[in-house]
Amino acid sequence: MDVLKSSAVGGSLQISTDVIAKIARLATLEVDGVQAVCGENLGVKGLLPKARALKPIEVSLSEDVAQITVSIQVRYGSKVPALAEKVQESVKSAVQNMTGITVSKVNVVVAGVAVPSTEPGEAE
Picture 1 (spheres, rainbow, N blue to C red):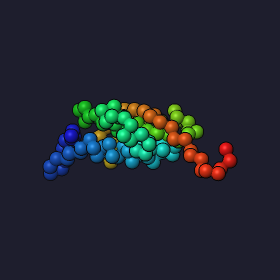
Picture 2 (picture 1 turned 45 degrees about the horizontal axis):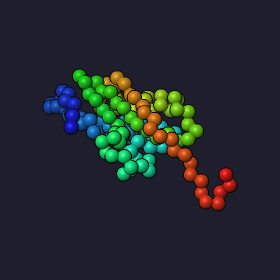
Picture 3 (picture 1 turned 30 degrees about the vertical axis):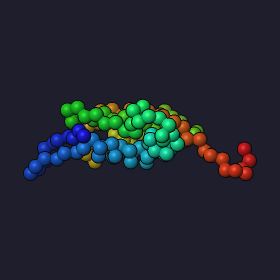
Picture 4 (picture 1 turned 180 degrees about the vertical axis):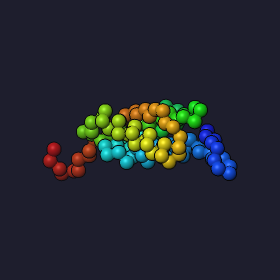
């Protein structure tokens, strides 16, 4: 597990990349139009070998600068380019505000589309 070490008054501060990923996940889910972060409720668990499954959020740190990749499932009917831009803004803002770590890039991977299910007996 990678950690970031920075100077803090009277000691040091270490922030795990897992914490950064958790902040990014929560910021992503706040965006209207995001159904899930990939790997959550996609209905394909167990179908793909773990080695081939997408990692929901990847964080790489280089010289106190983070690059984050978020894989999402969008709701059907969402405008994907606008949605991706909102996810980028939300993740960058949340991570920088909460950790003080500069985020140079947020990549958004649209891994699926959530289609609304029709209830039995509904007219189509």
